[in-house]
Amino acid sequence: MTRRFGFRQLVAPAALVAAMLVTSTPSPAGEPRAVIELFTSQGCSSCPKADAVLGDLSNDPSIVALSLNVDYWDYIGWKDTLALHGHAVRQKAYSRARGDREVYTPQAVINGVIHVLGSDKSAIEHAIATTRDRNHPLTVPVTLAIADGKATVKVAASGEAAHGEVWLCPVTGKISVPIERGENNGRSLTYYNVVRGWTKLGDYSGKAETFTVPVPNVDGADVDRLAVVVQNGVASKPGLMIGAALASIR
Image (tube, rainbow, N blue to C red; front, top):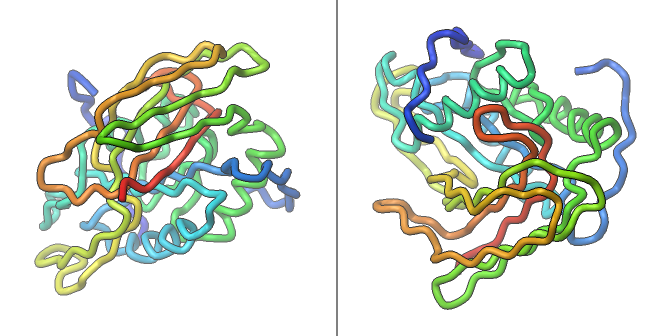
């Protein structure tokens, strides 16, 4: 079953559907139409279906689909091997920004502003269309080039005032994990586009920006791609996704 976690139970570290059908505005060629963040857990019996849905969506080149494994179900019998505590903090920050106190798995956050059940693909597609119609996300072109061990991120100027942040994430494209205890005991689960860390490249105010940094090295992680998100707001109160890119390292 879908697992919900009390809003007040998450502790932040020091750092770090509508019923009407909506017609989506098509995205320009080469630009993404959605960023999907799936908050999932190896200790959640209802999550494997959502993980499979995200895997399917990750095949769509117009979608930046990311798995954000959380750690708050570790106590029920299995420690999630892909979880970052910062993902639980980010999920709580989203609920605080929306004002709805909704923190659960599997939860998909679409373009930073709408959440739906992560195993419901039709709800995800509807949320994509809704955000594009109402919120106009991902209007800022972002390019990500990787060469000689460095990542160069170029964020174009925006025609409107923006107050956001630029983040770089090392990503594991696909990984299977045998689960030995807990609700998914005995299963081998596959995860797609797993986020292994977050590096803030800088702030974004609407002016064109270029960042060049070493490709992040994550100990023990098979990182084979990088994701960039440009998002309104700040980490403690994230808002609309205004730009994104995903590129392979290899």
